[in-house]
Image 1 (cartoon, rainbow, N blue to C red):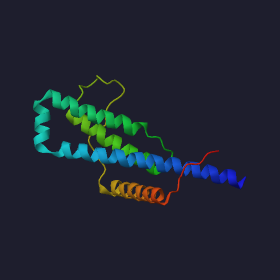
Image 2 (image 1 turned 30 degrees about the vertical axis):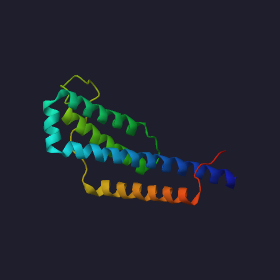
Image 3 (image 1 turned 180 degrees about the vertical axis):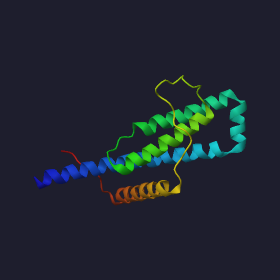
Length: 147
């Protein structure tokens, strides 16, 4: 019974760590998109060039789908995922605004990103987990558990 509970705990922990690792990778891609998005000359080019706007919109949508596919029951995973989805939707709304009524019940959220408090906490947590995973890989350990 103890062994069964411990294995279940290890599985839950490994799933959370895997989700946090995937979020860390997605966060790095989001950082790249954010740099482009905040670059004035690039935004000006997006406004003028519809092909460039389409490419950037596709990058946002691909990352949005990637982040949305990350599963995790952990509160930290859900909060990080939600904040990234909010930011990506806000970027998409600015780059490719949709006319009212076109999306029906699926309306995009407005550009109101939370400030540094929660974001910093999540970033520190993800960085800590990534460091733990890297340490574990160097030591030859594994989080995978088979039942």
